[in-house]
Image (cartoon, rainbow, N blue to C red):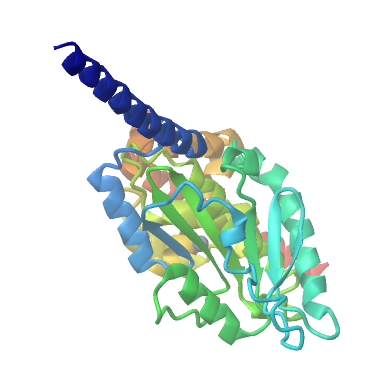
Length: 354
Ligand SMILES: [Zn+2]
């Protein structure tokens, strides 16, 4: 009897140790793992993310599992793991970096692409404050489990295409005529941007494309901020013109007067209702025109408020929350465009006559 009870105690002790080991192990993994942020993404938001991934060409946003260690930049595609194995073989990627960004470029003899990479690094750094001003937020590595934002500057179109396909894990993604792309993964642990890629053509010196890469970089960086700011626990389904329009508005790629002409006012009247999607191309220029109208007729504060609300709810709910019925606002937008067009053309005549 006594012996039996000793045995039981022994069993209990052993069991306790095994449980303690398991708990310790789980606890250890738990310590290293970032907390869950988007435990329960609603179906409507999943649908929105799928829609972006399928229909838009410069935003690759997917829902996929992100592991606790995926945030580490050592897993970036630009990290050339074989660089020291064969000294005669040219390195595929080299990098320039600071505390916020890693810019990956392909080294060449004249260091032309290293120069471009350094320009991109400086411009990315300088874009942080303007992004904060408009979007009300910026995400530093300390907000992203230590991850620095990777920016890829490939020197050939082929490499641009290949790198995009590799990051998206889609073998046939066509990057023809796409100036840049932001590739983002969303999972329970958060929103992780795999990288921003710039088309080598953005660096072509062209009188109509001066500093072209800066505008593209800023457009893509605004996608990084917008998609990281969204609260995926909620219905944050937006029309594409919101993310593309605000990106164009932010980088002000166009001469503001050229965003809208007579033909485009008619086009907006027929095809761009604020309560629905615009045609794909119009999501960019007409979306920009809408935010310009908001800034000029209601003040920049309203554009910023619109974005703050957009992180928490769908486009339709943003209009509702801000007390702006979209049908009425659409008419206001059209009304505002026409006299401005006449004024601008008179101004241009006056300039021409000077
Ligand atoms: Zn875009």
